[in-house]
Image 1 (cartoon, helix red, strand yellow):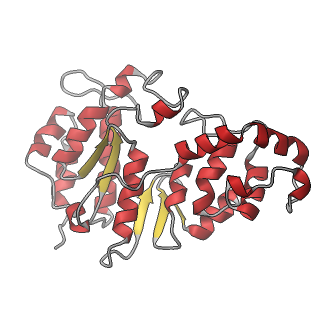
Image 2 (image 1 turned 90 degrees about the horizontal axis):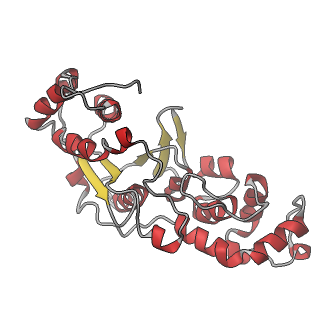
Image 3 (image 1 turned 60 degrees about the vertical axis):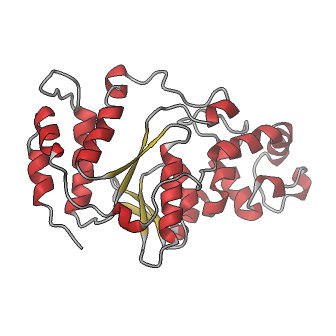
Length: 273
């Protein structure tokens, strides 16, 4: 987003961008919605791995918009899960799992391109949607993209690493080898220690097997880091997520952001029962 200032001269481009994006969903017919945020960047995972992502390096102008965004979304009438001990991805995983248990729900759509959320996909009932690329990924789509099913995604990330989250993976293990091996064995502990026992032809098998054996405890730790929690408190019933229109406070928020059109857009969206 290009830089944008509110009435007091503070940078608000990220806030405006997210609000406009969520409004676009509501204008498109979304009736039930929840937004997960990292109220603080650090989480319980930082206690497990010292290199896990922190707020260090985030531009101060961007970091300063995190909490005001949460307030603005609430004023818009949107349910917000602001995570402190856990991460936003955990909240999305928990919400998707809980919503999928409801017989009133036809489909759960997780709107994010993040590959770690692919572990939450279930058939066509829980799917992942990249709104930028307009790509919908069901369980077959996860397999097509990674070579493994959703349940193997944490193992896959443990091998290839996740630079965004700050863990490196196992040396030498790339996407192709990881996908091939986990596509056959499913999980790290099922991969034979010796390359001679591998039933999948992989280039540099002996080297990869040695690297995995040397780093197996670390790989299991990385898998724990990559495994999203579904026990995070998010909502009691799906109806808690029904959007019932913006609050009166949202008009003031839009004026303060110097984008009164956000309020106009929000109040024109028809509500559903």
